[in-house]
Length: 536
Image (cartoon, rainbow, N blue to C red; front, side, top):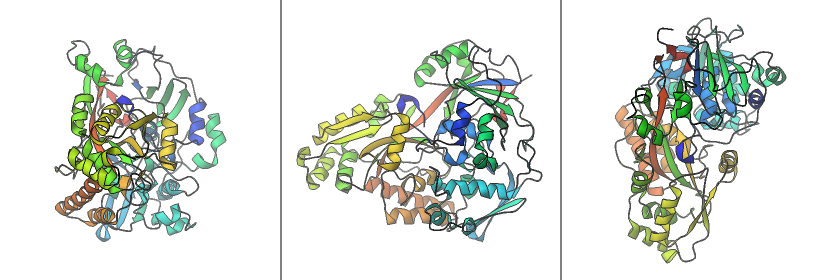
């Protein structure tokens, strides 16, 4: 949940949670890491990167991108996504899609262990995944598991028996049974939410907080945490071999200095930067060669609480959608790094349609719809507030609504934690949000965000026709049939307006010369295991 302009993003967006992992962030578990004064890259076994401070390290309770960026290094998943958005083997060396996509069998690599040398097998995977649907502490991304047989019943307390969930783990395999064909499940489990954790993450909180040993399944283990840095140390027992970089310094604060300044001074090897800085850096002879364009499989969008007036009335939602010139606002206000959205699914996602599913700009039709809803010229329309964690586009959007509909919409900005807590428990009538992909598939932006009962359906929208289209997409095996089903789903969203897609983003970064593998996949996560220094 990060992005320039104050708009929050997540590989999935949800409230932050207190947990064992929070204790890890408050207590140093090793030698305190150095700050930004270090000369980055001076030791070729080390790398220094600017990163947001994680709120949780436990994969099952992470809801924000900053936590996912760290957690993905500590807890490995069965599959991984490469920079081309292709699913690759990780802890699983292969998998079989059986019974028409209703059963997936993952074959684990032989000899897997956690960082402490204890064996890692199928039972550890199942235990880790069951924590995602723990009814006492449900994951903000529990909807990623809803296609697993019995997962919904377990999540909602209708069954207390873990064996009722369609997960079976053997020493070298994991079998998943699904309620419908879901051949994309190997991509879904690449999400950091599915990281494999040791049993002690739940049962031995005091030992973890005291620093008596951090047990990881990923390329790195936690070494130290200070108010300005999270330090990671290479896992010598990582399945792919010890990473080339032994120590990673993730700086979470720069003492008020800009990332560009710290990078230029030698204090960072890799850092995200804003579009404004990228604009001049591309012409700078010194920093220009270090500039990188970072793809972002993300969408910024606005949504409505469809369960209560006034936005329970379709005509009101349509009026808001048609009155605003959404594309022009992005083009004029968000800069070259933002692209006007044509659907909820951003470019680069495999299977994305080229059709335009954005709302039409038709102020006359908008006024007619609002009048039909009982508010001619905006008369009698109730007070509405758009709530966000901060969006630079709010002002222009509200100006269009006032000019075209005669409606005055108020604005409210909430702090990060409070905002996502409110979205989950008591969503505002009108709100804005950003979403970074969990895995590269249209369903991550459609079914996960808008299906009936989804934990991420913050607007509480329900459409049997939409749900049927999503189910058809999951059941289809022919790519043309899959796309046709998703097109039906997006057409329903376009007509019913539970949400309005606004823009897609592109990020920028500075990367030190000689740092190899510093390529993001578009999912917002840099895979640290792939980093190496040229000529170390």
